[in-house]
Image 1 (cartoon, rainbow, N blue to C red):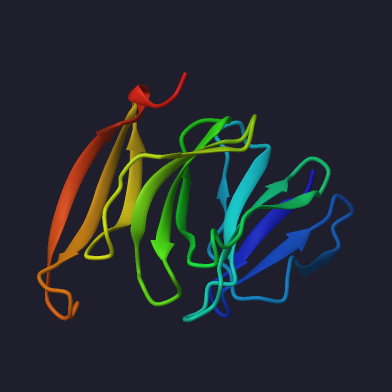
Image 2: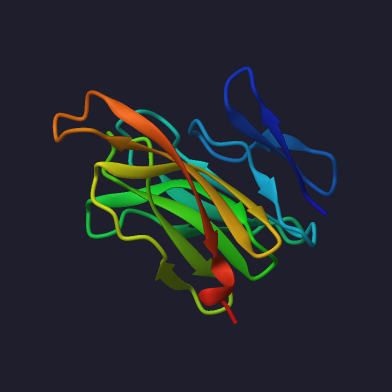
Length: 166
């Protein structure tokens, strides 16, 4: 099996092959990969740089396949965060362009590549962090007080994802 090691010093992912060879997984700054509950796959975002079009990738630790799951959507929206729900579903933050920190919450079904939109907020309200626990997504976010997007308040919301999954 392959292994992924995150280098905090340069925000790169090191791939360790089944033969112990080490090389960089890609040439971009990336998020720290998260391993699936079953331990056989990992997800990560790359490139994770300001004003870059970020993509979500799935890496198969068994065979080394590295697949892009989501890139930009309609040229305007892109993944900002991703966590595992189970071995079949991911919870995603898909945001507004390259300048925003967060966005709306989606579920992604790995079995059929279906993307399910959970929240439908404008740019003023954005989730920036997700945590999953027993069927519920805990969302932390910001809500801007005006269209100038200078001042904001923080908010927390809990979403029941059982309403959207099988």
